[in-house]
Amino acid sequence: MNSMSIKPISIRIEASTICQLKCPCCPTGRGEIGKFLGVGYLKFEDFKMMVDKNPWIRNIELSHKGEMFLNRDLLKIIKYAYEKSIILRADNGVNLNNASDEVLEAMVRYKFNSMQCAIDGATQRTYSIYRINGDFDKVIENIKRLNHYKMQYRSEFPYLNWQFIVFGHNEHEIKAAEQMAQELNMTFQTKLSNNDSFSPVKDMDLVRKEMASGVASRAEYKKKYGKSYSQRTCLLLWSYPQMNFDGRMLGCCENYKGDYGNVFQDGLLECLNNEKMNYARQMLLGHEKSREDIPCTRCSVYKGMNEMGIWIKKEDIVRKDLEMLNGIAKRKDMIRDTEKAGEGQVR
Image (cartoon, rainbow, N blue to C red; front, side, top):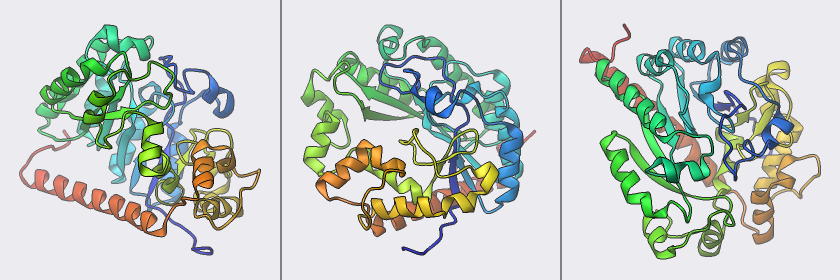
């Protein structure tokens, strides 16, 4: 593992660090992302160059700290990825407040794989407490428009997931939101807040029943499972590395205060396998001590791992790789089956 270079088929690129919402617990809403990573969006020319130079890439996540739909080149990116047989996802999350008909149709037409919609409530009154400046009705309307195009093209893509971050002010609407998700042909997922001091959970037993992990806070998760709620993000340094819109290699989706070089300038494989990135991986495996120039050193997830002596395991890395490979293979099978039946054709 020490000297083994990596060449992942999956990467993550921030489509936009711009966001129109002001969510209290989000570093983008507080202005931190713009301060450290800049305010901008992924340009089509940069996306095309990176894809052309790294033809083994088969899977790309576009959502990160900003709102993907605010990228003015998104339509061209979606179309080009389809032409290159690259799977696109927005599983990290979008707020879906602003999306043109043209882009929504393109997501269906060019088989954008999946998207997680951040909707923390079942009414505007509740939703807007956290999603400040957000319009609940507009989000639901955009989902309905996507479903309209999915029916028109007889396509299952994109898969839609309703993500519901649980707070004290919205816990009473979990069931109503889950019912709405079902009616909109969406899967539903509850998530713990990353800040227990903002609108803390009131009915702990209710939330425990609604969470797959059976806990009502991240602190309770750590106590029950002996690790951070976000520890899986560390696996991204091997299987699904995160880049900023301007090419800076961030490694994971938690880091925004340091980088491992610039992919657009230095090359993808060079950034993924340079001394700094390799050292970071050894830190996460517990093989090396923390170093000040490594972004992980300042991360609360790494600090928790260091404190408890619970490190990333090699079998976790292999398992994550297999998950990505199996997901890509499943998508190919589904597209082949629908196209054999004469469905979902690009028109």
